[in-house]
Length: 114
Image (cartoon, rainbow, N blue to C red):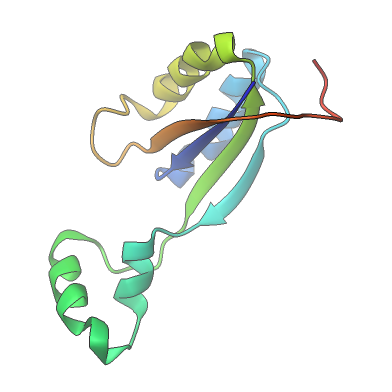
């Protein structure tokens, strides 16, 4: 089993993503709002960060817009299918600003339908 973590930058696609995941029997996901550290630094008034902030403002939109981070425990063999579903909604994750997905090993799960 793996914990699949997907950082969805196109938050307007969350409902569509949830429906598509459910159609493919990926249920039980948890979604939280999250912010990248670069965006948080942009919001900082800390003078020691002024050089970093100046450089970041050139490449990032300084609005404090959250991402959605999706957490799902998935069987190892279902990871490619889950990623295909994600990319069918948001586009290729090889393209910029479509999100980021990664997995972590899960040693123990209790309370999840199998």
